[in-house]
Image (cartoon, rainbow, N blue to C red; front, side):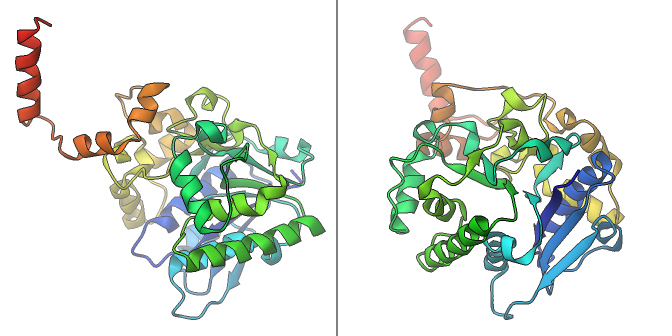
Length: 316
């Protein structure tokens, strides 16, 4: 495998980003024992010794102490082309490498990524919110065909890519000052000339929306937007913070995590229902989020009682 694998990590220790990156790098090394794996990090992030041994090279970039961790992470991500030599496949920390990645060498695109949420942009569940964010960047995204997920990116070492990443970082920092924290809106703005090619969906299979690609997935991306911060944290085992904290306490990959690395299907909750079409869009609405926030298993609801009365009257 000629293409190196690259991770980025910035962690204060109050989060579980280190454990996420450790699990992903472990899975990458397990499936690609001869691959060159590098880590790009800041000067303050502590690395457990077993984790550090997974990397062939660790590049540290110092920041002023007042720079927030999220900003550090995004500066490294949008600037990774300048910090790392050679062709690389960038992989987000919240992933599992599910199979050997040798096939990446056969993709001749200089810059490639997968569709965000595996959908054309006009069908994207967050289309309106994303267009609004892009407008704050001074960019009208309503007409773009593809909106890319930045969690897995093939990046060749070309002058064009160096220029692209420089522009991406400038756009991100401008957006950051305007209150836009995600890096994908600025990526879309930078890609207005359609420089990014499509990677097959199997290279970045998002667990919520990528069921169709899960069987043949190269990389499983489990911590998609909003998962882990609400009721959806039960969807996939590694979205559970307590699972990763148990790993931190053990100081090594635990058996429950290893079982998911060895078979990513075991990461899904034992009872999982798949939704598509209009149902999928319903679950993205404020109405659903409101109802979900007021639902507690086993508790009685006035709404449920009223609906039960209605059904009785209508003989349903």
